[in-house]
Length: 316
Ligand SMILES: NC(=O)c1ccc[n+]([C@@H]2O[C@H](COP(=O)([O-])OP(=O)(O)OC[C@H]3O[C@@H](n4cnc5c(N)ncnc54)[C@H](OP(=O)(O)O)[C@@H]3O)[C@@H](O)[C@H]2O)c1
Ligand SMILES: *[C@@H]1O[C@H](CO)[C@@H](O)[C@H](O)[C@H]1NC(C)=O
Image (cartoon, rainbow, N blue to C red; front, side, top):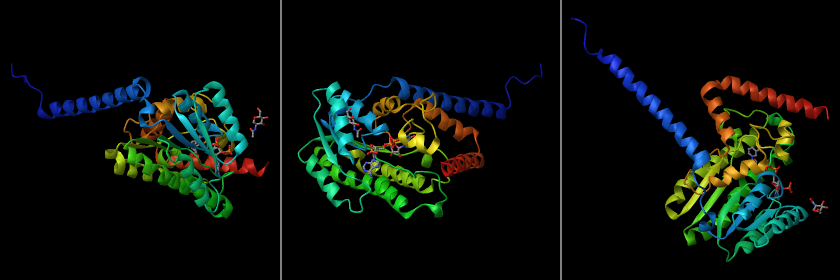
């Protein structure tokens, strides 16, 4: 008879908070499943009939070239090795004979990029370049303490990862602004976004932090002018670069092949997301690291991988 009919207020409050927490996380997971597996890709031809890709002769860039030509876009391929560029172009033509391809030879580690950028501007003159993939990027040949990195190596890295990406975008953006449409994809890295530090590859990680923050800032600058800027963040992808720095030779569940990675990456273009991790198992790794592993453990883990790599390369 004298049992209370209603719960004390704090129990109600706690249940209410628990419910909100649960709904929030369920919504988060459902949204992720939708975006990652179900949401249809944009028709990229709506941005323009040409795409420009930097570093299209290996790895992720080469897969972008193939996937975008499969989507019916004509290509401007910008790389440093004419033979490799011609080979990629020939491979694409044999699969998709209707695609037009222009080749521009630029070494992005040149001391003076003025000539290279002028060549790019000449190549794109009059073309409606709707998609720009700023893919080119390099890292150290092997893990190194910051003060031991050769000037030649880090200056090249800064030129390729930061200066070239900035200058190529400066060259392509005015045309997009005139046409009021375009999609720009900048390839960042888990090295600057996912882990709290990236010891022994410090300048590489910092260059990718530039790409990330620059990209997200200009996303906001141009989002109301029809131009969608996006920083895509891969974790490990089985390319030449990764075989060097992490001795990963083959693709696996957590390390996709460049083709598998890029199929997901292309589906993310043009949806108005400032930053994304396109590949599903990369998102899971990121989530796991973020929620379950304290920073100091991630720091030590990265350091031990770097030291391993350093010693391996010393014994070559
Ligand atoms: N693979 C990964 O796990 C991973 C993870 C995070 C971020 N990323 C980023 O993804 C992008 C692509 O990486 P990837 O793994 O595909 O690299 P990759 O296999 O080493 O390919 C790099 C591409 O860039 C070109 N390149 C390199 N230096 C150049 C220069 N000085 N001038 C012009 N072109 C140059 C290469 O041309 P050549 O064929 O002539 O060498 C090649 O086409 C990079 O920005 C990288 O930082 C990769
Ligand atoms: C280009 O393709 C030809 C023919 O398949 C091959 O012999 C050559 O080694 C390739 N060149 C490069 C730089 O990959």
